[in-house]
Length: 335
Image (cartoon, rainbow, N blue to C red; front, side, top):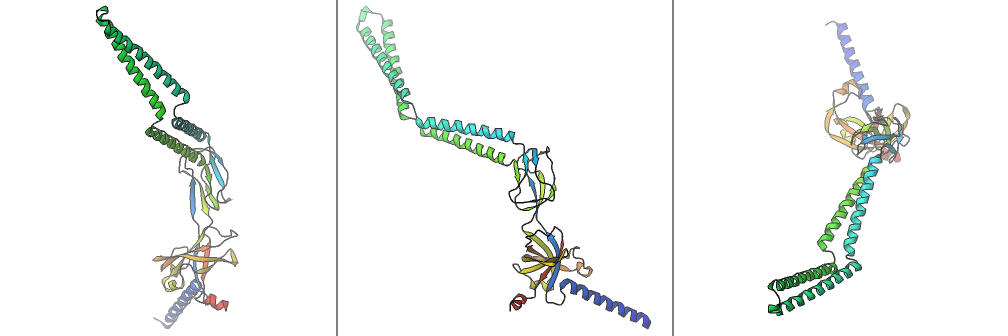
């Protein structure tokens, strides 16, 4: 190899080393004791759906709109569920009235009527008994058939009087405990059906579970939807996460709970406060969102940090720089 070629090769190697040094310098720090790692804004998204099926009667928010926790987003037609609730409420009333009747027992008028029937049955039996005795004493003056008829009627009237007495005793004793328990169980069953009908009616309205931004409106007014069919996709704004990556060499400089700073290109003069919530225990290859060629093939660890964004400036997927201060830097600054 000629001297010129050797010089050129040496120059290329030197430039490559300098470039690699600048890349590492830019990725991990700028000589100010601050470790810088890179990533992007990550949000949790939820797909909101009705728990019941039906036709959508109202959609209230558009894509890109911010919603607060508890905001009403959409509504199903309610008539079918209102009828079901009214039916269940009527069944509860019927079961309650049945229980009231069982607990109240017989009315005074019913007991008086039963006593009167008993007295009438006893009087009828007394007459039939005397007739039987009289016919039995007549001897040859009567026939055997008349004696049998009179005595048979006496036995029938005795049974009728005994039946009237038992009926009166049942009225005085009141309803059996077992029967009351059955009626009470029917009342609980009716109340459970009413609660389920009210739940289904309440679920005809779709609410925002937390503050967020509507990313997609998947259904429109008039659409038929089944239970669990998504109607909206909402990006939750609290908490907002930064997902970044750090190499093994600097892994000791970060830990869950540590305070860090976040910067974005859109607001270069603004710093967002954050704290580390998670550091992965498993290494992985650096994702392509970290645009440094030398570092794409390196093994790194995922870091997630919760970011405070009260002004709502950050957006999903926005590239960020996470600044990790040198250990003891905060204490030194305080001094």
